[in-house]
Length: 406
Ligand SMILES: [Ca+2]
Ligand SMILES: [Ca+2]
Ligand SMILES: [Ca+2]
View 1 (cartoon, rainbow, N blue to C red):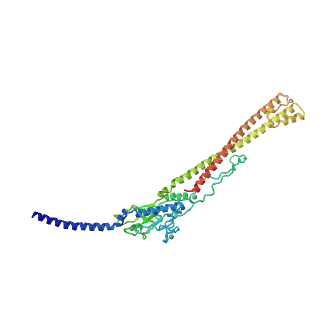
View 2: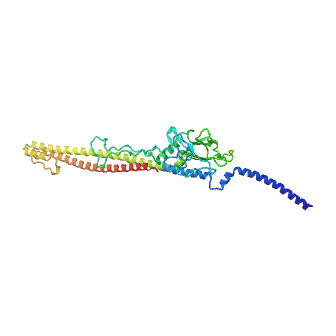
View 3: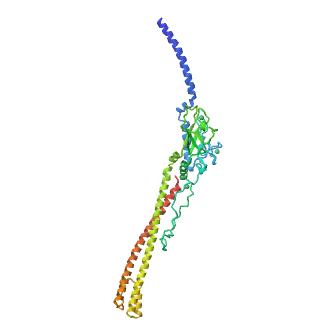
């Protein structure tokens, strides 16, 4: 009896249990079917995020070869459409060198938007020359700092600022990112809305998702501000079916990926070094001209000493009443170093001999001073030429970095 009752209980429980299980399975199946695209993607290598990664790599490749962002495709032919007003469109897959459009897993096109700041003329899709290093001023070989005429030593001439400045390359794009990063916040330019905070982006990619294949919320085509997009962090599950994927790439992030800080720093360092060499050269040039002046003064002092000596000899001759031959002999000595000068016998007066000796000593001293001045002038000239060559080399190096770009 007890056994039969137990069996009946067992059979009854199984039916109830079965019904409950079926009901639960039905609810679960209904729930799962809603999230089926996400569930499928969990087990697949081909997800919207992977596709956005692919788009991002293609954009980076384009930037490296074109020094600008690709423009959006606004007429669905895969080619970019560049105009200042074209800031939102589709990814220009063909211009990026891709064979087919980049879509979401369910086949919807990816939306692509770029930063364009009209108030500061900052268009990251424009290959413009907006960066030129701060080169030193032109070096003027015609020095006028010391009031003495002097021609520049051989090999020294004017060094003009590099003329090939209008070159647009990676440095200009890096500079554009830097300028954009420091620009004033403005809702008219591409940004994400992160819980009310406006976060500017260099470019934004949006996949509409696979459960609700529309662009939703701020990503919607009918959104009031077409350059405003949802934050990449917006919760997908609890936000009423929102399933878009937003990939925003900020100025600093892109700048860092392209190695911009190091590139700009390298050019800045080279330009600063050229500035230092320019200052050194200017100082060397001043010293050279100063030494030219001192050498000319020493030459003039020597001429004066020679003249004084000649006059002392002539005076001595006249004092002792000698004839014209003796005077000529004295005059002949004009310009001859005192060591080789014989005091004329005619200069017999003690006063005259003393004056001639004094003048001779003066000439000796003037000659010695001239030798020192000439030696120092040679040193100053060598230093000037060295500084000139070093400045020229440092300027060429800075110029070569500017021309190279990345
Ligand atoms: Ca197009
Ligand atoms: Ca440039
Ligand atoms: Ca969606």
